[in-house]
Length: 417
Image 1: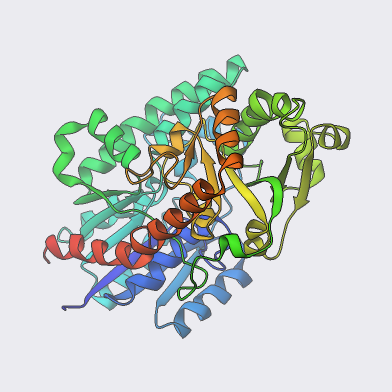
Image 2: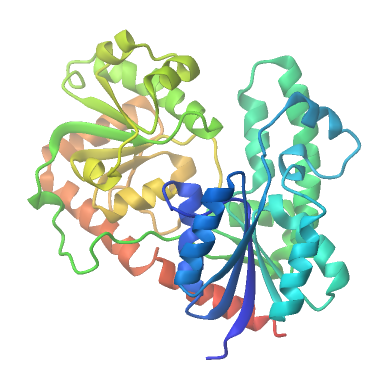
């Protein structure tokens, strides 16, 4: 196996891998180092945390450095974006002086391949290609970012925000397609994003690849123990910060369209919905759930938990009610890796072709659908156990970081030097 040198440009500090965004950056680095002499360059807003990550990576045999840039949105940032080709959500990641550091890294390390995570960091690649025309560029799309802006247009009610979002959507789509065309390869992490890209620009098909994200099985030698451990009956759990736009709208939709009606029914009143990753103030201010509402609708806010694995394993069902979003939900893979029975909506179901309703996940699209399938599961433990076992098998055998790293290596090697 020929080892090449690979430079990864990341939009945020990947360590420690405590949320989906960081996990999807950290573990690829961890596994890619088997195939490449790897160097990671990332953004952070905290020098001390960035330095800790550099030291951590060096101990793992991965070179690393960083740049400091605060990316908090401001109204002035939107105004300054008038006349620019790059949407303001991406432009705030670009610092021209940082190019000098990247040029030095490429020259000193003799880098031939560049793996860029997210369109937010692609302006660095565009500028570097001018100086290093032989540099091979691989863009890793965690989401089709323009599609997220499009979803926001459909959901926001404020007329001014709608106008701004439409302006940014058009700009994002145009620039994102430019990046696809500019790159030597574009790697999508879900089937749904790959299919959408084919609809947007089918002529670029030869550049498109699917490389699924993965998840670490907690105990690789464990047998299926989901039904041998103590779990709380009649329990659902949702994990995610409502400060993230997608989580806010998705959780609101589920609570208002399904859970409130469900919990007030004769069948549903015994169930509880647990939520992690949010303070009570955030739940109240962002999605309007007061303490009284939580009590009324059997919702338990667990706040920020130290050991999310233990919390997840203690519950019967995980719910991922995605109505807006793109890419792949790592929290779905996480829950499946622990053997939870995962309820998900069409958006999540279409992420991976190997998701099969009532075989390894549970698909629902409405209140009636949700209740009907839950009743089937409650009446038949064998069905629940089958779904749990199949979920673990899928993560263990296919949706894992070893497969991700091997396929990434093969794609990069196919580009030549």
